[in-house]
Length: 253
Image (tube, rainbow, N blue to C red; front, side, top):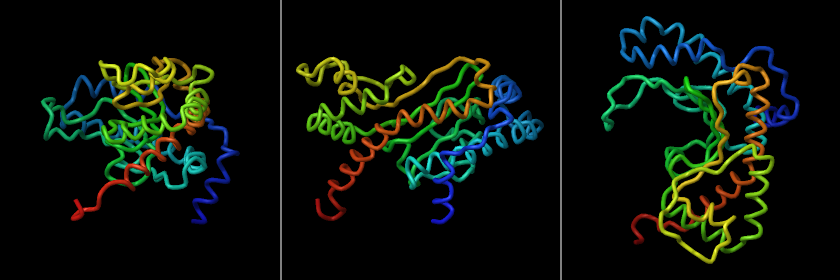
């Protein structure tokens, strides 16, 4: 608890990073891995992975930890693979693509638990050899969660629009996520329709490979994106909490 409080207090006085969180060596590794996606090549290049990918991502997680805890003290901010840092090894059991390694890397800040990817909001930063992105939202929300999301909009449309507009101001983030083809409620104004029609949703800032990616000020960009997304993050957790509280306990159905 003391450590969490200390990290939260440090959120407003983050040190200025002197070295970039992402290097061209990281991108070169991802490009080479995509062309040589086999265990023999990876083992020969494991040192590159640990130096140019894993070490910088752990440092980035540590640097952002205090700020993330100021958003939500329940977020997992431990710099570990399989938690805040993506695994490089793919789970190919249910995939037609049997490539053993991912050629993309990311960090994610989420509350501990097994269901975050399917049905709980999280903050993310992802890098590929073609571009990078950051934002917040669901990986794949359940129909029940999105139904509750629409009900929450119906209850307080004006309050929701304040949240939506706050997140999208300055055109820094955009709304994405699969939509229904059929119109769910034609009476809704266009501004709400864009949210109401989503099967799942997330706010994202998509960028090509550019100088800013290799600039120490990238951290400030991530903080800006996560700060803008925070009102929606808290709204989504209210929806998520409502869903959990209204589920029927086992044996009572």
